[in-house]
Length: 249
Image (cartoon, rainbow, N blue to C red; front, side, top):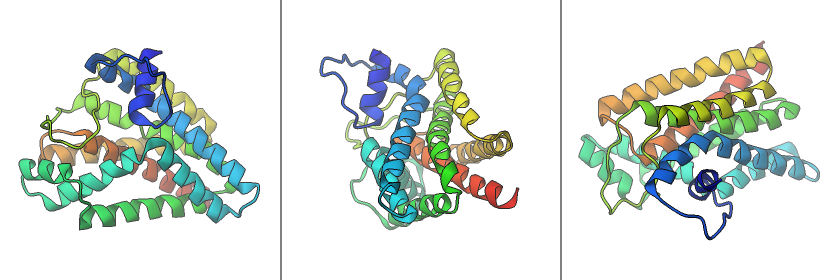
């Protein structure tokens, strides 16, 4: 429970017991519950959508649902994605990329990237069958948090100095944690049609493979912002693939 509550504390704004102990070891182990935390965030987002649909049309209800998930996570992953866009868009060297990602200001690359990914997420969900959105929200938030765990397991961590504004995050994933993360994430795909799952898994792995290749070429490893960026990219990719599935299969 300490490990799970640590995951809640660092990946969401959901209150945890004030007496919760902290250690770098707990934080590293907390990554094993990253997908489970995603399932909770997705379920809360789906619940917000259901409540909003009682009195609001679908476009507005979807917007409120997305805002609810952003509030629950404290825009943790969106912030990482924006910093990633600024750093990798404006930096030419590893040192410069990391320096840019530490800055508190939001640059042009980050602004455009954040607006683009939020617009894509909203538009994709809006073009899905309303009855299918609830399951996709849960599955999307869950699976998109498994790939960052895999990235931590397979990719070197680029240490940042104490001046970094990034929220602390675990940087080690052992085999046990990877198995736990996988076994808690994949069952949520059973909420979806089998044919859709067959499309989603290769799409998520393709994004992971290309993303990892890109960051290894540019910086030789990952930082906390990079994990947030990967989560956002995988989540949006899953929704876009779902739109293709429901409109062409």
